[in-house]
Image: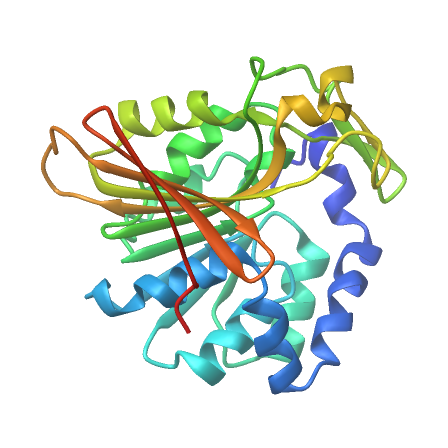
Length: 274
């Protein structure tokens, strides 16, 4: 497998060692940790509507999501893919009964397998791609029912697609760190797949300057609206003329929702589902 310069950092042993902190968690702690993330919350909330049971994770690292699913959602058949040889090796050592595989950076080998899983899940993978929108398109065309993503987004300003200007110092190497304009993401999803609903949950935070990130200056400003953003795409087999788009903001224990449907904006508050 050929590794590009932008992905060399994931071949460091320290990348696998980082996730062993999760391995040391009890199942109770792991559940609490996983379900603190909005993308997992979206999965749990929408699980009753998922008919199939094939679950693929892109960027599985050392397999801790597999441990979570096996313990709390065992009905799903899990397969994990990652470009990191140390991480895949460690996942196999910890969970020999799991299904973990190395994959090409562009997912070409995954695509050729024609897996067509019900669910595809990625967390912090698109953000580290030099061509994030192309990678996003590939991921969301893999599943038959749902694509679940964790991205970094901005409300204002165009996406900066230059890894020299939007990057992170990770494991002693510079890696791409792409903050995508949220409207550009929505449009890319519209152009790529048919979907019935798109649920977006933003956790607003300043992205510039933290965790060794070198980002465009506007990503340091609150008015840019940078966020850790979870997306749940409920896919459709046929074209839906007016798919529902629900955008929410995580505020403490409450979710503030905005429904974007046929040009109307409806705002309300509700407690998240248990």
